[in-house]
Length: 397
Ligand SMILES: CC(C)(COP(=O)(O)OP(=O)(O)OC[C@H]1O[C@@H](n2cnc3c(N)ncnc32)[C@H](O)[C@@H]1OP(=O)(O)O)[C@@H](O)C(=O)NCCC(=O)NCCS
Image (cartoon, rainbow, N blue to C red; front, side, top):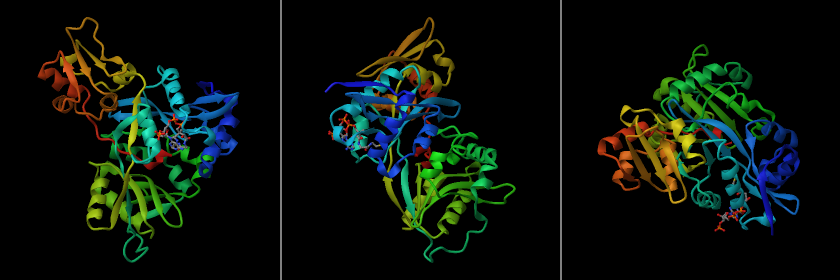
């Protein structure tokens, strides 16, 4: 069987939309919704067999914050699908190889929000060079013992129009809450707030509501929620300046809606502390870890985006080598020395997404370093200092 792998073209729209609707019948998208979704910042590899498209990997381009002041161009993969009668024959892997070629100079990294390490999909991505950089945990918080409970003081649901009339306020609260963290697409009027109102999103998420805590004139926090008969899912939650009390009140308000609340939180955040305390009191439980996995497309462009200048390394060239490729992390015109880091691809993903402490990785021999003094290792640790990553479910849609 000869398969052609090539980049998606606009004339593939209906064929790819129909193929993926067969692979994912519960998340079918209309042709209009697909046109809207693919209108910008979109591409995909497709696999063609005998003139018919049998696989596609849709991707949206988003500007992700790896660390404060360090934004990277990320292609987020979703609805990765091969037609049922052709699965397990190397077509998905062939498309992954094609992406890495045609996107090499058009982005820094590929990213997938997975549903858990035990899934076959996770194994598929790992085998194709995408590795864990973050491990947000999904929790389920129970409603109060007495059912729906009293409406939480100061918490109220607001209508989409009211929420969307004031997007700059939510962008500001988000920044004040998560500005020191990375791991999410940069917030703006367009994303995710404006995007949530697009036709295909509305069709997929009919019951999005918004909740706020604090006075209407100066809310202390907000949440984006999807309500169903049996549960409430929190897609995003933020409190002004990361205030833990406001977050706790917001969560209490959402629980008072009277259904189990599903939400994600990452270690090292106030929300994670609140949920773990609830786990200890048995009013919440962890559902599972949902790893965020990344493949670095272009070592040089990713490194340029995430490198923080430090005086000690100004005239030092820093290069990397994995078992499959080599690259430059820090160029220098006439370098006084060259430092080489040898590491596995999975360590490279973490390093360039600012999720690795270099000095610690050297101590643990996850990085073999050549040409560096301890003071260089310390300077490298500063240039690529690790940053906590947070995760909002809205970004996994
Ligand atoms: C996941 C998928 C895109 C992989 O493409 P593929 O052409 O089947 O995969 P390859 O032949 O290149 O690689 C084989 C590996 O893919 C994974 N895989 C194969 N069939 C799969 C299936 N039906 N569902 C999930 N993963 C599958 C396994 O890890 C497999 O390795 P294994 O046989 O050792 O277990 C394809 O199987 C598919 O469309 N699955 C259903 C939809 C899906 O789960 N998409 C991913 C989530 S968005």
